[in-house]
Length: 168
Image 1 (cartoon, rainbow, N blue to C red):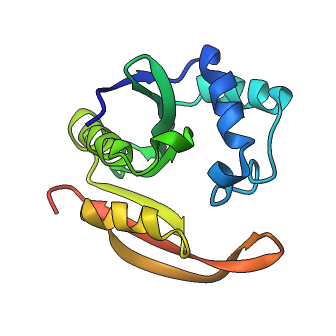
Image 2 (cartoon, rainbow, N blue to C red; image 1 turned 90 degrees about the vertical axis):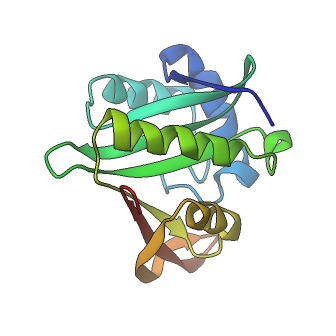
């Protein structure tokens, strides 16, 4: 099992993030802003907004000292006690090695215990079977199904909304 560490995302991590988001294999199921690649200018502006946004907590995932991905909570709503989750394993040689599972443990613990959230939710492309299996492993259940909700490679695809309630 990898020895993972987590550190809050900082400006020095942007080159790793850009590398991952410019890899078509890595970004194929990500949001429209980065699905076709990204550049330094976009990321500089993005990070300026991130630094001043209390509704996002993003962590770099390190295997030893090697950056391998990121995981985070977005749309953090401390009043209603919920947030959305995302995970990205950017280094393809680290896929299918348990890193996503370990990172999920970390972020769920952070969200439910540190932030006191009641619910963590996400949206996932219906064809992203590996991600769906990972989320189900951690108790996420389907809350909604959105037909033809996203445009991928010229074709519309379905999205699934999944959520986990604390202690479920």
